[in-house]
Image (tube, rainbow, N blue to C red; front, side, top):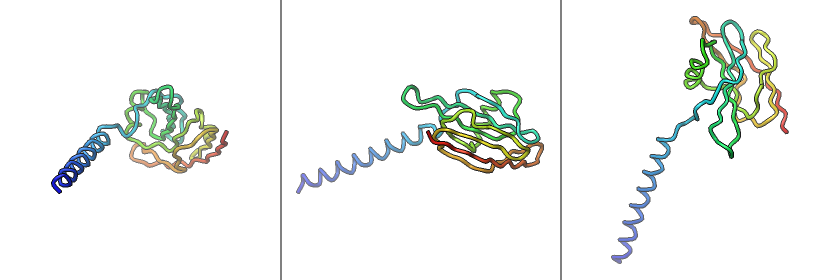
Length: 142
């Protein structure tokens, strides 16, 4: 019986150790990789822009991912990259050059690869005024 108590005790210690290690890994890992570069900037509406940002953090085994952000037009690329870290993208895909046409408050998008996330409406704020943009997505899988 004494051996059984010892086994139970060590099992609980190992379980707690594994839980603490998993919690540390979860807390210390970044939620989103760092952006690599701005690929394109497309002017939208009055004072807004769509920023296509490349995330190439996976190396040789993970494909490049493009995130599309709608935000107020920024003065520089560095400023846009900093602002994108605080924003949520409306489109996350493997396809580059997804923005095809811009018509006032509507944007036509076309992708020919995997889509990870998409929202058909997004907004940006310029001088205290919200501007809402709608997105029409056409997707063709290879």
